[in-house]
Length: 198
Image (tube, rainbow, N blue to C red):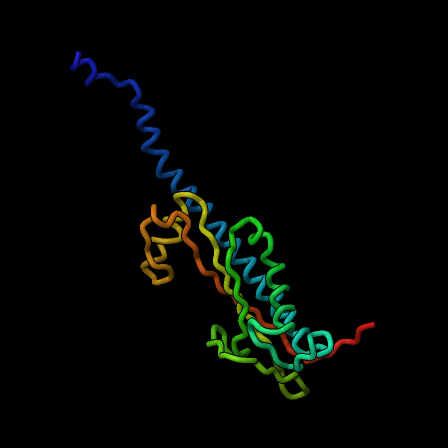
């Protein structure tokens, strides 16, 4: 009886299928997770461009529309001018906020001539462009993207990037939904134009 059980080959195809299927399925989940992260990256870049376009209009606009805040100045996190820029950015990423993919959003104003430059504290002052110089406004958008595709989130969002210092490693079962910070910058010419309203 024991010899017959040892020679029994029933179920061997199923075991071979599992051995082949699990790595392929894991690879598929990682691809889906990376695809979602790239989609968030594209939307974040679009949001940064929209934020820069909104800032170029809002910063120089009529102070009466923004609580008499001074023109050509904006401070991250404060004031009605900032709120208008923040809303433009938030509308761009709204679908990902609503489905829970993005749960954190930050809008900053780094120096216009320094890509990935350090953001200072306090209000940022801009000089409108003229015939001899071109002025620009730069907006940096940072989002926290939830990695939520099962096994793919642990591999694509944690361990493959942790060795580069992008995200500290965690024990997967203690952190089932890791996050990734995605940063994008947008830039737009700043004319300092004030608009007439009816």
